[in-house]
Length: 422
Image (cartoon, rainbow, N blue to C red; front, side, top):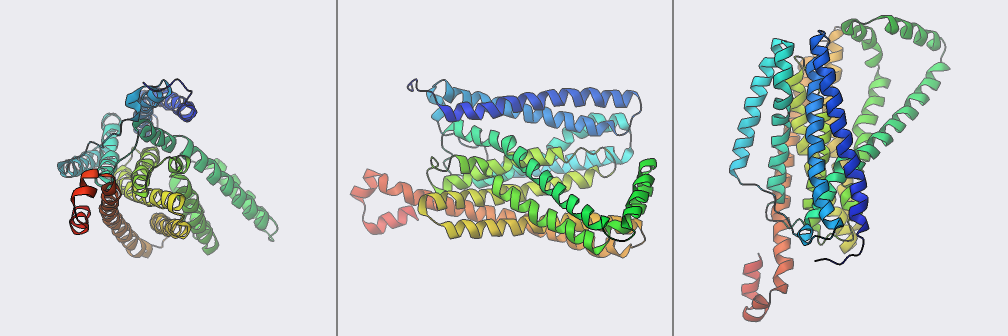
């Protein structure tokens, strides 16, 4: 048994995980009731609320399970310090991909049918079956053969990645967005005639409920080069700067205790997966014909979030233990660029759709294919980087463990030791 000394880190993490689990579960109940009511009253898109409800319920259950394992550390149970292994086998890759493909096909048919009760029944579970498999595959491939450290810390990092991390990111992004909007408003207000134009536009939108009419009206303003530049700056630069710094929040918090850069890489993958699950499920609440595109893009985003956070986890611990500060800065810059390219591709696709509504149909045939190809290349590249990083991490882990083996050090020559550790 462990000593009875109060373990404050686990207590502090529980203060985030338990309320987080409760909030997710209460939200799930409220959204579920709202969805059923919308279906009964022929409301707009009841499936979207049910997707959000089931997603919140899943996230709440994951946090509840994680809180239980962290609690074991708080009350001094020895099993809390056992190092877990991620339950993964190579055949999971083909199973997960097949399951996700079938779910995408069935869900696409249900969404395009526009039968509300059918979408409400099928899309919530199918959304999870599409979002979760890529996360499972990336975690399995990335953590294979790596020591994750104590179980309570593993779940604590997952809990932080699902609660505190996203909360801080959202607050920072909203604050910066408000500052930018206020600055733009002040600039426009002093321009001749712009104040009257803004008031006229506001009055029109206040009385208009047709989304297509609103989009056609706002289209020329959105396609203004200054607006596009501002949007790209915020979404492709500011947002990646914030998210790539804070996604590995759990690794930052436990940097002093994490044993090696390889372990930091594995825990970074878990932290990125936790954030990817929350963000992707939160952004997949669409029940209409665009459900297929939304969930497919969100599933691909998981490749990005998990890999970049794993790389940051490695760099953070290398900087802490080996004083490789320049490597940390270079890694941060690289993952911000990758994240920015992904976000820029999604923004380009959205702008192409808006442009098509105001007669600029050529954007659809130029921007969209380029953006989709770019995201595919990035996704494939993320998998390749993940596999290469895992191989290197395993090699370094074996090399670090070899000198501590008394049989190896006493009964082998330097040549044979080199062969064993390579």
